[in-house]
Length: 189
Ligand SMILES: [Zn+2]
Image (cartoon, rainbow, N blue to C red):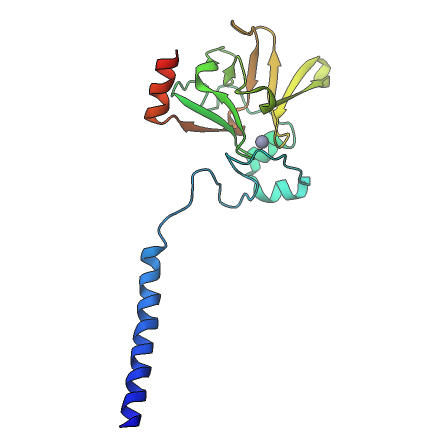
């Protein structure tokens, strides 16, 4: 009798553990937030703390085309970005770190071959540095959080700023505005 009871206890334990195992995949739904990027530990749309990483580390976590623009100050070929002709309402983020950079309502069709904006989303979202390479005097714009190279800013943009932020589309992530946000902006405007 004692043996049967202990066997029953054992059996129920096995059943419980089986159940726990099989029910796990159902619980483990896709909880990956769109504010994160797989394989990129610094990417965040909410964390505004500065990112300081070695070039080797960046090389490991960024796709090669993003690394080329962001860390090697590369330039994508003109007319190649999907954002060049793109007029959805939303926000553009740094593709290397998730920092918010531009709002779609400051985007304009400059005809220069790269996505263009007349104003960044906030003062701190961008860093300005003089760039005297290629025999030109230009102002380079970098991400204010991770210092990724974004592009350049020129003084031939439209009102109200008169500026043209000429940005490589490869370094931009776009997130569509939510319906409520759209309505809020409509009311505000
Ligand atoms: Zn960044």
